[in-house]
Length: 132
Image (cartoon, rainbow, N blue to C red):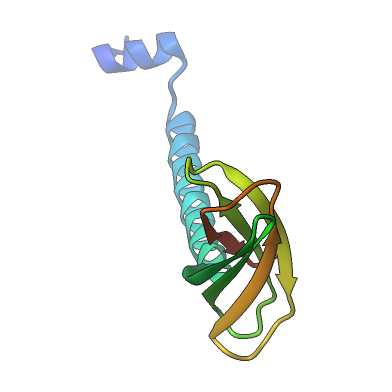
C-alpha cells in the first residue's frame, strides 16, 4: 500500500505531471526570447526612419499661395517625403501638398515649397516628414 501526499493526489486528479511542468518552463523561455527579439527589432527599425523637422520661415505670396521654408534632419542616404500645409487664422488647413525628395548624403537639409491654397492663408508649416 502506497501512501500518497495531498499534492500527489491533486496532481493526479488534475492531470499535472512533471512533463507538463517541463512544457510550461520551455514554453515560457521561448516566449520571453521571442518578446526580446521583437522588442529589439522594433527598437532598431523605429530609429532608422526617424526625422526631425522644423519650420524656419513662411511667406504669404498672395491670396492663393504661401512659401514654406523648413529643415529636415534624417539619416544620410535616406529619401524623404513631407507634408507641407497652409492654415488660416482659425488654424483650418486651406492648402497642403506632399513633396518627395531623393536621398542625399547630408544629415540636415533645407527646402522651400510653395503651397497652393483655396483661401487666404495666415501661416505655413511643415506638418510631418518620413522616410518612405
